[in-house]
Image (cartoon, protein in one colour):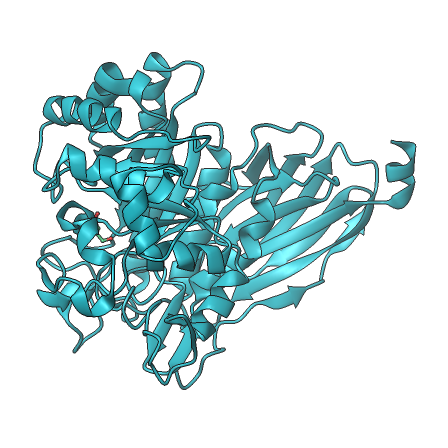
Amino acid sequence: MKHTVVVNTDKEEAGISRHIYGHFSEHLGRCIYEGWWVGKDSPIPNTSGIRNDVLEALKKINIPVLRWPGGCFADEYHWKDGIGPWEDRKRMVNTHWGGVIENNHFGTHEFLMLCDLLGTEPYICGNVGSGSVQEMSEWVEYITFDGESPMANWRRENGRRAPWSLTYFGIGNESWGCGGNMRPEYYADLYRQYQTYVREYRENKLYKIAGGANVDDYRWTEVLMREAAPFMDGLSLHYYTIPGDFWEGKGSAVEFDQTEWDITMQKALYMDTLLHRHRAIMDTFDPEERVGLIVDEWGTWFDVEPGTNPGFLYQQNTIRDALVAGVTLNIFNHHARRVHMANIAQTINVLQAMVLTDKEKMIVTPTYHVFDMYQVHQDAALLPLVIKPETKEASSFPHVHGSASKQGDGTVHISLCNLNTGVAADITLDLRGMTSLKDISGTILTADQKNAHNTFDDPNCVHPKPFTNVKVTGTQAELQLPPMSVLVLRACHAPEFVEKK
Ligand code: AHR
C-alpha cells in the first residue's frame, strides 16, 4: 500500500515537552520492590539499595519525570511512615494491590535519591482520599523548606541537610474512584482547599496538578476547569488501552488473534479523540492554554500472566505494545501545545513496562526500545505531518501513523508506525522546506510474529536495528515500512544549505 508522508520542515509548531516521555512507578506488585529497590544488603548489585542493572538501562532512555507513589496507593499512603531508620518504619497492608505487607523501606528519601541517580524530575502524588491537609502540607515542607521548621529539622535529623527541588505535585489520584469516589463538585472544592497549603518555599516553584477525568468523563473536566482552573497548573487524564472488558477479561498480553490486534490499535488511536475533546473543554475556560493536560497514566492493560498474583498486574510486552507506544507518543507530540506531561504505567514489572525482572535477571521490552528511539523528540519543535494513503484504506483505522520534530540544530526526526500485521507500506516522504538532504537513515523495531516478545531466555528477540534502505531524490525519500514496525528517521540538511543560512 502506497502512502505519501508530507512534513513541513520549516513550519515549527509547539515545543514538545520532554515530560511527555515521563513514567509512573507505584507501590504495586514488583514495580518498586524487586523492580527498583532491592535494599543495600541484596546480593543483586545495587547503589544504596537501587538495582544497578535497572538503573543503567533506564538512564539510557532519559526518563524526564517519574510519578510516585501511586496510583490508588497514593491515597492510602502516609509519607511519615516511610522515613527514618528502616527498622522503625511502620508495616502496613497494601490493600489495593494484592494485600501484601508494605514495609515502607522505599520512602521519600529513597525516591528522591532514585530521581537523582536517574537524572529525573520527581512528580509526587499527595493523599487526598485518606490523608489530611496538614499531612500534605508538611510533606512539601519536609522536602523543600530550607529554614528552621519542624519538618525541615526532622529532614535534617534523618540525614538530609539541603532541601530537594520539587516541581510537580499532584493533589490526589482518581478521586472519582479509588481516591475517594467523589463527585467533581466536591473534589473541586477539596482541590482548592488542599492546594492552598501546598506552599512554595524559597525559590521552589511548584506545578500543581489536579486529579482529572477517567477516559471520556468530560463533565469532570468541565467542572474542574470551571471551579478550580485558576488554582492549578495541570489537570490529569487517565486512559488505558484494554482490548477486552476491564472486569470480564481484558485479553492476554501474548495470546491474541488478529481481531484483538485490530481492537488494540483502534483503542490506542482513541487517545487522539480523547485529547481533542478534553482540550476543547479546557480551551473554553483557558484559551491561553496555560493549564496543561497531564496524561499521568496511560498504556496497555491486559490480563496478568498466568500463575502470577492478580493484584500485581504483571504482563508481558510484545511488538503490539511497541506499536501502541509509538502511536500514543505520536499523538502526544501532535497535542504538545496542551499536553505538558504524560506518564506511562508503569516502569518495571507492572502493566506496559520498560523492564521486566526475575530475581537477578533483567530484560528490556519492545516498549523500552520505542522510548529509546523516540527520545529525539524530547524538547524538539513539533513539525506538521500529514499522511495520505494513495487509495482509501479498507480497514477501520489508518495503517500508517507518524509525527515529526526538529531539534535546535535543524535535524529533523520522523517517527512512523505501520500498524498492519501483514502488509508493508511503501512510503514517499516529502520533506518540504528542506533545500537538499544530506543523509537520511534511522532505527527500526519490527518482528515477524505479532506476539513477538523478549524473554529471560531470549532477551533480544525484539530488538532495534539500523535502517538505511532509503532512496533520496532531492528532498524526497522512498522507503518501505515493514508490517508491525516502528521507525525513527533522522534527516539532515546538506552542508551547503547550513552554510547559506
Ligand atoms: O496503574 C494501575 C492503577 O490504575 C493505578 O493505581 C490507578 O490510578 C489506576 O486505576
